[in-house]
Length: 126
Length: 332
Image 1 (spheres, rainbow over the protein chains, first blue to last red):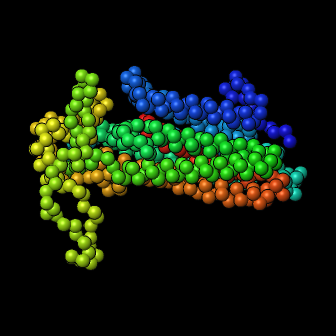
Image 2 (cartoon, one colour; image 1 turned 45 degrees about the horizontal axis):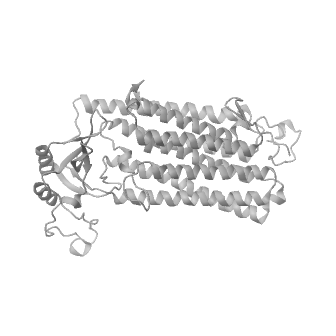
C-alpha cells in the first residue's frame, strides 16, 4: 500500500525517507521552537522590549513562532499537505480571513477603550 | 486519500455522488469543517481576552509572576511547568499521528500501542491542568482589593548582590491578627436563604496594624511602569492607600476576585483553559472508544482505519489550540 504522503518540508530542503521519519522530524522541529519560546520567555532579553510596528519585538517573535508551529501541526500531523488544494483552501482561507478580521476589530476597539480611560474624561479607578 | 476512503457503490456515477473533487471521505471533510468552526469559537474567546487586555494594557497581570510553581518543588520557576504540559500534548500528538500511520499499514498491534500512549498523554495533560488550576485558585501571597476594585500587593526591598530588588511578601508574614470581631454569617443566624463564603484569615485592619509594626512593608499597585514592572509606592503612600482605599483581603483567584490583578484575567483563564480542557477531556473519551474498537478488531475487519484518522484530526486540533493558548496566556 504505497502512501501518497509528501515527504518534504521547508519547500524540499529536507526530505524524509518515510512518513514515520517525517513525523519524528517535525516533532524535533516543534520541540526546538517551543524551547526557543520558553527560553526567551524566561530570560526576557532587553532587546525584546523594542517596539516594532506597535508591538514589542519579543511578542512578534512569540506570535510568529506560534504560527510556524500551527502550520506544521496542521500540515504534517493533520496531513493538510496531502489533501487536495480545494479542501485545504476551503478550510484554511476561511479560517484565516475570519480570524484576522475578528482579532483586528476587537483589538482595535480594546485599544480605543484604553485610550478613553487613559486620556479621556472617564476614570474607572478610585 | 485512496488508502483510507471507504468505498461505496457510487463509483462512476458523476451526478450520484461518485464524483469526489476533494478526494476526501464525507466523515473526514465534516471533521475538518467542525474543526474550522471550533477554531472560530476559540478565536472568539482569545480575541475577547485580547480585547480586555488591550483595555487594561497598563495594569494587566504579568504571567511570569502568576504561574511560577512546579509540583514537588519549592521556589519560583516561571514557564517550566507549562512548557512541560505543552511538550506532553505535542508528544501525544506524535503518538496519534504514528497510530494513523500504522493504521495505513493495517498494523493492528502498533495502532493499539500508539492509541494507548496517546490516551496516557492526554490524561497527564488533564492532571497537570487540574493542578495548575488548584495552584491558581489557592494563590500564594494574598493582596488587598481597593474600593475601586484594584489590587494592592505587598513586598519589601532587599539587597541581592548589592542591588535593590523588590521581593514579594505574603500577608501572613506581617499581618497582625486581631481577635476575630467579624463572624462568618451563616444561614442559621439570619434569613435561611442568606449566607456568605469563607471569610479570609485576615482583615484589612489586621494588615494596617501589620504594616505599622513592620516599617519595611511597601505596597505594589497594578500599574506597569516604563521598565515593564509593577509600580511600587513609597512608604507613606503605601499606608495611605491601604488605610483609605483598602476594602477586602483577597487570597487566591476565583471568578469574583483575583489576588494577581484584574479579575478578568482569572475569568478568562478559567474559561479558556477550561474550555480547552473540556476539549482534551472529550478527546480522551473519543480516543478510548476508538482504542477499544481497535482492540476488538473492528477496523481490522473493515480493512480501513479511517476512524483513527478522524479522531486523530480532532486530537491534533486540541494540540493546535493549546499552542495558541500557551502563547497568549503565558508568553505574550
